[in-house]
Image 1 (cartoon, rainbow over the protein chains, first blue to last red):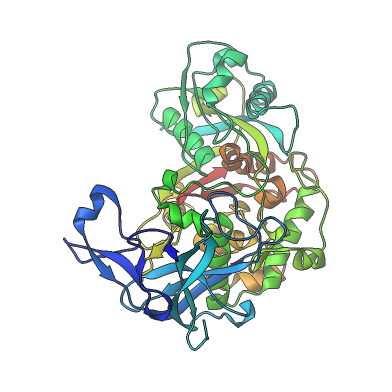
Image 2: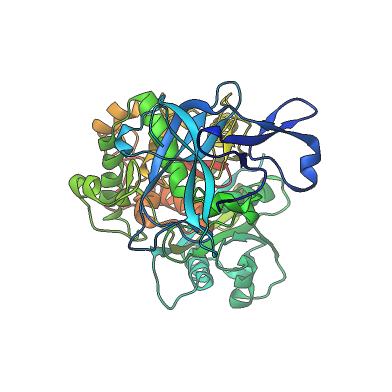
Amino acid sequence: MTVQVADNLFTGEGETTRLLAGRRRSDGKLLFPYPSGPEAENYELVELAPEGTLWSWTVQRFRPKSPYDGRGGEHDFLPYAVGYIELPGELIVESRIVVDRFESLKIGLPMRITTEAYTENAAGEPVLTYAFTPKGSAQ
Amino acid sequence: MTSVHIVGGGIHPFGRTDGSTGLDQGVFAIRQALDAAGLDWSQMEFGYGGSSAAGAADAVLPRLGLTGMQFINVNNGCATGGSSILSGYAAIKSGEFDIGIVVGFDKHPRGAFNADPEASGLPRWYGQTGMMLTTQFFGNKINRYMALNGISQQTLGLVAEKAFRNAEHTPHSWRKTPVSLDTIMQSQMVSDPLTKYMFCSPAEGGVALILASDRKMRELGLSGPKVRAAAIRTRPAGSFEVFAPALEIERGKSATQLASAAAWEMAGLGPQDVDVAQLQDTECGAEIMHMAENGFCKDGEQEAMIANGDTRIGGRLPVNTDGGCLACGEPIGASGLRQIYENLEQLRGRADGRQVDDARIAYSQVYGAPGISGCVVLER
């Protein structure tokens, strides 16, 4: 059994993943992530496009402090890429990036959405978050 | 019309001082500023002060004397120091007061700043999945800027190399040992393309500045540079700031572009008039981008300027003459005031070993979370 890291963040898994955003009822402006609490009343829940281009990127080389709850301790932490993906006509969203070689990342690279089991919960179940990966990769 | 002058300054060395609280360092700086100007605490009509992690600045009062003065705690993110001096400037400019003090101090734990999603109005998953780090923001921002404007990684390294070289001659700096370009480039990668030596670290320190009206300054037989402009602006729509899960496709100006434009207008001066500049250098990329955002060059020109040594002491526009945040560290409450303290030293010709010849106009710009920039123009 896999679980999602949060509600109202995305639907589906792998290639069928769709990010959820809010479309403001008054003017159609998009907001990601979908707001919680009373603010949500002003927004309609919509899905964002599954493909876009890499707007910028970096690599997280050290283990973040709390509240990070991903895999690895101080010594067995594995670096991961983080960047921004421009979804044409919608938004530029921040995301973890699943990629074999960091050096292959270039601004403008076509990207598509996926999910990543970035950690396990207390019950040992994989916890999924959304991620992007270069289009055409096997992830 | 009243003009505002800086008639005294004090600083507690930046870095790490075990056994000394942030408050201790703030009090030290105030006493030094008063001594340097030959003034007494009882002469201060107002105070503005701030710290981010070392308690309320108002706690200096019992240590220095409960005179009943107006004292206001300032808390405005990374621009706390910039906000304090702007408040002091306005208090005198308005005619309400004639002389007062601004102080900033801080003491942060080691390592990158800890981020709390809830405190920034963000969902918890953003932190849990490892995306809420200031270091990542800097990596993302400069990586795109470099790709679009032809800035090389070596240029990042040269900025750090200059910082440590300048700091060698700065009594208040933290990291005083020059570091070779090779060592900087080969050091541990923190957030690509930025290595360990290309980032500043949270630190400790305290700064105090005494402001006075021109009338009061003459009456007391003091002197000091004139504040030609002080302006703070916040992020406009479309600016790229720290902790942003999404950005609008239509990009806009930055807080720094707005603040610097306001400062130039207020001063009636432009970037070409500046002899020495202290620009926010949280990491090397910030100094490079801020050169353009403050109007000192166009995007991309930094590559040649830095290769030519234009921003070194002796160059056309010396930048971060005391080593900046890279070599002094960043105690949030004090950092913006350190820049102004360094400009005060430069304008008074007291920056031994790092003095910019005949500096007359000095500029400073502090920037930080959540997207605030504060610019100050001083004239000797």
